[in-house]
Each structure stands twice: as C-alpha cells, then as structure tokens.
Image 1 (cartoon, rainbow, N blue to C red):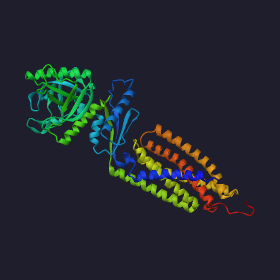
Image 2 (image 1 turned 90 degrees about the vertical axis):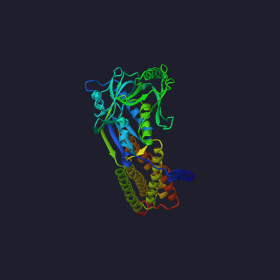
Image 3 (image 1 turned 120 degrees about the vertical axis):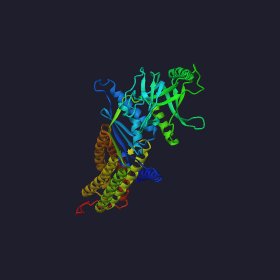
Image 4 (image 1 turned 30 degrees about the horizontal axis):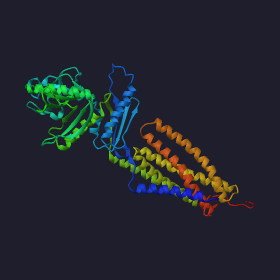
Length: 491
C-alpha cells in the first residue's frame, strides 16, 4: 500500500483544521441570533381597507415593502436582521436591539412627505384652536388631507406647549396649510449635516430631482414674497399628516427667486440635546432616504426577548452539547479502544471545522440560533455514527478471516457507500427544510446540512488515512475492533 496519499490527505486536513483553529483563536465568533442574545420579534400585517379589493400586484407591493424595511434596518446597523414573508404578513426579527420602540416606529411609519405653504399658525389657547383635528388623539385616528386639499394639521409633539391654563395637558400648535405643492417622491437623497452659525444645529439635507428642484424653487419664491408682505411665509414639511417642521424663509431667499439648485435643508430637534438632535436628524433622513412604505403596516405581534433569557438558552444548549459529547466519547473509547480514540479525534476535528465555518459564515450574514445549536448537537450523533459504522465494518471483515490491514481497506469502501447514501438523504431533507421553512427551522436545516457535508469530509480525509496508518503500524488490533477470537484453521 502506497502510504504517501494517506499522509498527504491527513496532513492537508490537519492544515485546514490548524487554520480554522487560528481563525477562532484570533477572536472570530459566530453572530448569535435573536433567541440567543435577545432583541425583538414582530409580525406586521398590511392594513387594507375592508371595502377595497386587494390590488392585483399585491405580491410585488409586499416584496417592495420588505425591501424598504430591510433598507431602514440595515442603515441603523442592526446585525443579522431576519426580514421575510409569512403569507401576507411580514416577519421581522432583529437580534441585539437595545431600543425596540425606536425601531418599531421606524419600521411602521409610511413616511409620506409633502411640502405645503403655511397660511396661519394656531397656538394652544387660541380661540380657534378647537378647530381641526384632536392633536392628542393617536396618530392613526387623526384625519389626513389629500394632496389637493387645504386644511388644518397638527404640529409635531416636540413643539407641544401648555393649552391655556390647563398645565396638565401639552398640545402642539396647529397649522393652516394649503394644498401640497411637492411630494417626498421627488427627493433623490437625504443626509445629516451640521448647520452653520453659532448653534451649529443638526440638519437634514435634501437633494431633489430636476422636476422637484424647479417646483421647490417656485414654492419658496412665492413664500419669500409672502414673508415680505408680513404673511407667515413658512413652508410646512408634512410627514404622514403631521407638520414635522414649519420652516421660515431666510432673509437671503429673494422674493420671486426662491431656493434654487435643487437642494434644501431641514433643521431638526429644536430644544433638544445634541444627542437627541442627532438621533432625530438621522431617523428623519433614514426614512426619507429609504422611501415610503408602499402599504401601511400594523404590528399584530411585537415581542421583546431579553438578553438574559437568550444567554440562559445559549448556556443550556452548550451544556447539553458538552454532556452529550463527553458521554459519546467515553462510550466510544471504552467500547472500541484505539478505534474509539480515532472517533473522538474525528469529532474534535469536526468541532473545530464547524465552529470556524460558522464564524466565517457570520461575516456574510449568518446568525446562529438556538435551533442551530440543536442542529450542532445532532451533528455529534451523525459524526459518531459514521465512526461506529466504520468500526463495525472493520469487525465484520476481520470475522470473515481477513487481516486487520486488509479489513480496514475493505471496510472503508463499504462504510463510505453507506455514509454517502445516508448523508445524501440528510442533505436533501435539510435543503428542502431550508428553502420551504421560515424562522428557526431554517437555522436547524442549515446546521444539519453543514454537518452532513463536514462528516463526509472528515471521514474521508481524516478517519480513513489515520485508521489505515494505525493498522499498518499494528496499533489497531483485532481486539480494538472487538472481532471474534481466532479459531483453529482460520487464515
């Protein structure tokens, strides 16, 4: 038997194991999923009017909605978000989120932005403040205006003041606004910038497309003229039916000229701290940049998983895996002796490779979930089963009268075919689960598939050459294989 291919095979795999070990030793770790590190899990349901038929392109609208949500979440730097469809609902799982309320607001808002001229400001306590919507009612219960409709809208809660003598109630100002002249769809980009002047407040810079820039210049030109005539001359920036900002025309904006160049800026967070101003500007820019949700979503379920619960789940899963590994290893060594030692080493090599691979996959978006940990525990059984099949085949061949060296060669061919068939079935099942299932089941399926592939790799490139070499040196004996004692006349 030419032993050089066996040595090369064994050395090559050990080199890969060494690289994986160094990679892990340098601090590479898997990203943990929602159930292991905490976060939020929510199901959003499209809010469709009962008297309106479902649009023919509803599937495409839902897919576009998911992409908009993913863009918003990605822009916030949330690691490994899972955003997918469940029928007509949208499943959002965001691990490691520290501020779920903020994310819930960002995900759910439709971000329909319009620019309207301000015709008047109604402050809390004014005689006509009771006109228009109730600004203390929930946002989804407040009436909205069509683009070609004028009316009264509430201001942002940040601008709230005390309503008359009732110091227990804070109400925002109301604005009489004209029809919409410009919509947010004309915005090409929105970004955070620092304003000029002593305060250097945070601003949201806007870049319009060509048509939007022309309309914006015309609108600001008219408002500058109103300013010169003593009228409000303000531009209301309306986000989902609420005046987020009522911007005055600066003195340098000339009547009849307006703001040209297709760019503008919105100052945010008046009266807030620097940190709060920056966050408000980032959120507004993010929503405008990501675009409006094609449909309105309502959170039908919204759950917060605490980091403590996730840590307990992780520790329990790892403890179960360690106990299982120790028990399997002790049994293999006690029953198969040197072949059992090889099996334990095979499991150890498998463990280093799978941990390094999971850490590497985390760099491209994979997150290890509790279901994935369960898949890894099952993988211990898969790898141990491969070692047992190999050992039993060796015993069968020895009992047929073959020497240990010959029995190892024959046994490997038989065990390899059996393992290949079994792991192929497992990989097909894992692939079906991965592509048809959603949520944690996909993590289990992925780990099961990875384990099946690595089991074949470790068996062929590690267990096979190592057992061949040990048998050639006479280290593996009939006793290790638990073969039947020799009888008289046996060859």
